[in-house]
Length: 433
Image (cartoon, rainbow, N blue to C red; front, side):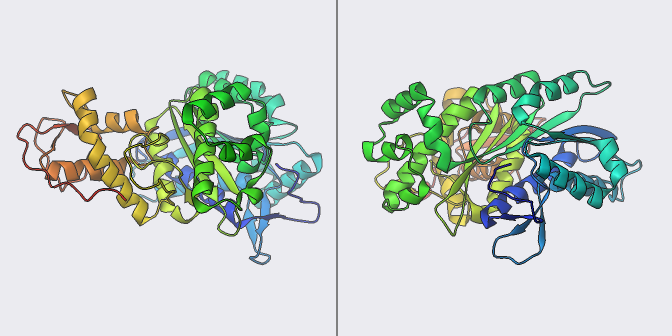
């Protein structure tokens, strides 16, 4: 946990924008458990939740009085309990479902680590902490190999590991550590945050990638200097609105190339948490090897829309440059307008994609899996675009048994999407603006 958080005299102070990270984390775990247990039909689930920068476990939110806000260790434990309880409250269940969850909390500062132990024991009891929690005072990078070994030697079914890496600076999480996690534990998922203020320091250690991206993306010199010149977002606040969006778009592409593509993960989301009260931003990356996990995280971004921003395109080339647009690209905050723009872009782009790549049709879940890294859309938004195209006789939608499916019905994972056999006139939606 960053040195800027101090538990010496009680809970540390948390910025309001950081609450969004915790909201996503809590809701993701609560949704993740029923999904991986197939709606609760699987009787038990083994989880290993690793918080690599755990902090002291509680906060007060800046400007919101003295009410205590849970930190990520408490959020992880309570979210698992909530998910398990909700599944078992289902009146249709005949047998209870259990989540066998273990926790590894790593905190570099010994005093903060001691504070976290006291917080956990106060909230959950000494017996729970002794049996379910491994509390480590040290650096995450020094203990990663041991955690991965623990997963590999686990008896019976190996646990599903989720890593929460919420640090302030970059230096503690080299890309090769992400590669190791994703390669050595194929079921692993990672939540990584990175303060945009530190991108300049990272860029200077990746000159080859920086030069490649600058040359390949045609970044203007007055934009690139904010990255290479060790300037932070406070100075960037002096940029025009258009230049700031271009700066953030460049940073998003750079981070995406450096972390997401090189990590070895099959699926990733590369969006930002942006403080509404300042110009500071946090990159919030989710890595997984399963499109289903990617979809859950994206759905939560759209749900917690007031804190998240995306500085790329709406359609199927999320971080690419669109030379056909007559108006400058603008960021969006995952609100209603952004959703409409995303649907419209998908309506424009999907027919050509399906014609070129899937001449015999494609299952909806596979279409999402192939596109998930290239679009801000979740599976429901993709399905909305598919239905619009079906209603306009551009696409057909078939059920698993080959039966025709009405465009008004929600697209199922097993539905096959293909170009329409009997194409009609397509009433094209108004162009994007």
